[in-house]
Length: 115
Length: 112
Image 1 (cartoon, one colour):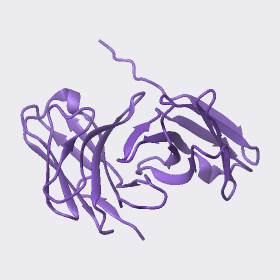
Image 2 (image 1 turned 90 degrees about the vertical axis):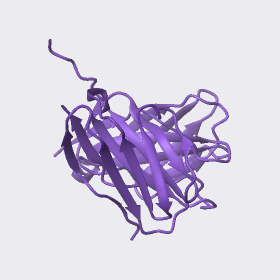
Image 3 (image 1 turned 90 degrees about the horizontal axis):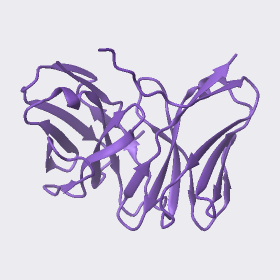
């Protein structure tokens, strides 16, 4: 069974705090993604990575950074959390060359509240 | 002041009836489409996909229809069951590198 694990299901942080969201996949996938999900806005891509130490900005990278030191792990970092970063964060992975070309495997999500 | 949240469109269906969920996509260059199902408290899960050179694809109890003329995608669920209650959203994929755009989703409520 494919597995994408997000370390924290629920977090509450204060404005200005540094926040780490961790994601680990056990499928040997090259591609990993961080999305945020907000009501009425759907999923929006923050950052993605297609190889170790590689990262690409998505549609809404401002206020976020990422780290991919190992193939299986992709971390999302909020350097200084703000209230408008309160959201559900979803990590996903995929394998390039998958004949279905595009299926994403998602984690369960991390709900972050910034006070 | 009070804030008003954005609400998902909701489709309520009697158990055993068929459900049709619609999605309008934005880019005529999109060449691959996926429907995802997201149950409460869980991440999205793949249901069915379709390539742009097809207009229909069937799975187990689900059918996806693609109308490229009007950039419209639909998901049909036969004999809807309580376990089908979830948010469903479409995704369109363009080009070679996993450029994925997600729809905002439709909430399906199955009435027992």
